[in-house]
Amino acid sequence: MPAKGIDTHRRSIAKSISWRVLAGIITACVAYVMTGKPDFAMKIGLADTITKLLIYYLHERAWDRINFGRVKAPDYEV
Image (cartoon, rainbow, N blue to C red; front, top):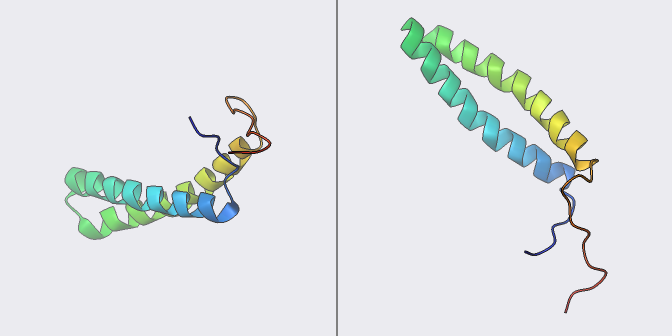
């Protein structure tokens, strides 16, 4: 398995956004099915996305500081 480097802030942001867009759509769909109110469902989906986007980014950056489960990258590659 090739050694992986540390994620950049830009990569963490891109991963956070892509995941939260997908998860927000799922949340809005579930809220719509449960309430039958599309405007309410979209508000829930948006609030959920914004809140969890920030939390996910902070969580991702915290884990980037933890070495648990990482393999040290080789000093050189051939």
